[in-house]
Length: 408
Length: 80
Image 1 (cartoon, rainbow over the protein chains, first blue to last red):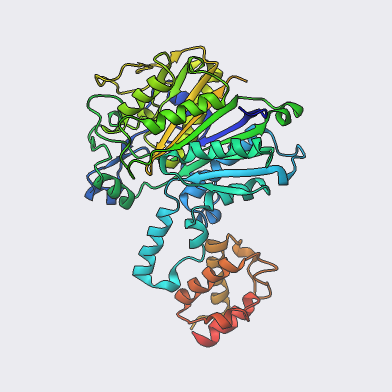
Image 2: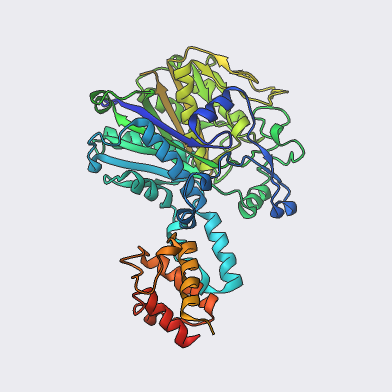
């Protein structure tokens, strides 16, 4: 347990449910699905023809010429980070840029740029390849653009741990502030890979739902009839700040980022450990790091992606590491799986659950898996007093990250 | 064969599309970097688009000599 307290003073998001945090949160509490049919011509050839596409295209917020130079994932990162920055009210407060860091990631990176430019290379030759290609596809691109946007000079860190990226970026932000390397960190993640190649790749793994005729019912974590995850896109950003720094400037504090746990399975490149051993260690570590016990965690925003293989191990893990009392939910039932951005978006949902004393629902849980022996906020948002809550994220590669947020 | 005015207005369209330059600001005396704020990567895009539009080849070692819109017009006029 650290002696340095870290708090969250700003939030930003652009998601399948809304173009900002407020609209996304409203839609979540209303149990709305962000999943729809893919009507693009290229979708016709795919076995998966549904996705959770972003509600407000970044081109509606960022001017045209700038958009030409940004990968879609970078544009979304900028949109979310700008919102969080404005929300925190840090502009003009005299914050030393050399005390401002960025920890921002992406699960896959600038894949759409890579593929689009490859099309140009094949069709028109190398001279037609955009001179902006490299800064658009480099995996540190989103972090670097966020850093430019806020003028961060204490380092720009680019996290990549597949579907645990967002949560791990937040965990790194916590470490940076605790270690005294920064007073403020813009932390988060972005993902934009709704494109035939990534979809075909995931579909070939049989990891995705093919419930093409019922898009809004396709993402159904813990349901007996779940058949895979639904790909989502978007970005989330959090402003993490040393608590005394936030207090000195009279900032509004959403929550305390009380602790984090990071482990790796050492088990398989993509299969989750069925006993969730790595997940259990991450959850236990996060609770300990927060100076709490499992009994203090009243709510868990679960990783649960709606895959047959993944969902139930986590339930066992929560029961073992935290207990059988937390009210759990999977907001992926509404947002789809934002891959690298999931951990950032779900951290935001966890924080707002604490603030508003309500657990957002898990929709589509019509027929719960027999092994689901925890209390799920099914279908409807559940009012609940939440002094502390956990957000789990697990990723291909065997990455496990648990974050604990607490009332300030 | 395009006139100097036609080449200038064609470049103005490219500069707006690629670099967000107001077409009305484009004139032969204007410097790409100092007056129109076209950075080096955008200049590469302008050159490639101009090659396509006017059917010329503008080698990389020639690009550094094209300081102003007028320089580019003259080159295109002579080589198209």
